Length: 92
Image (cartoon, rainbow, N blue to C red; front, side, top):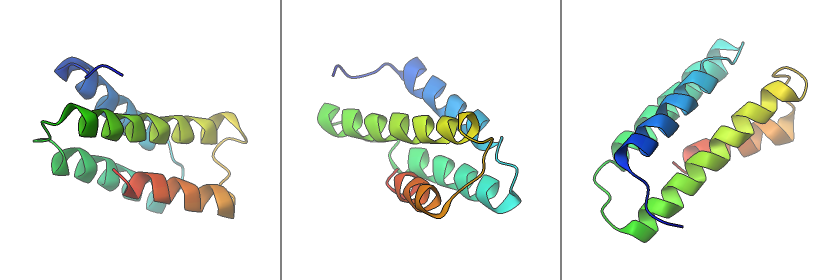
């Protein structure tokens, strides 16, 4: 996968923030928002294209997981999905 442009990274960040704000539970919402911000800040100086592609892939997986929560049952979080969501968000 080719390295992404700055605008693509910012777009992905904004989509993650927007989707994270949709959680009805305050605790999940604030946790997701905090993890997204922290993950992007922590890795803002990554220069290695392979590492960058890996991190962006993880962010895309997190975004897909968050979006799936709302298409399947309108954010009814079951235990396995909740744990996998937290694991993905903590990888950022």
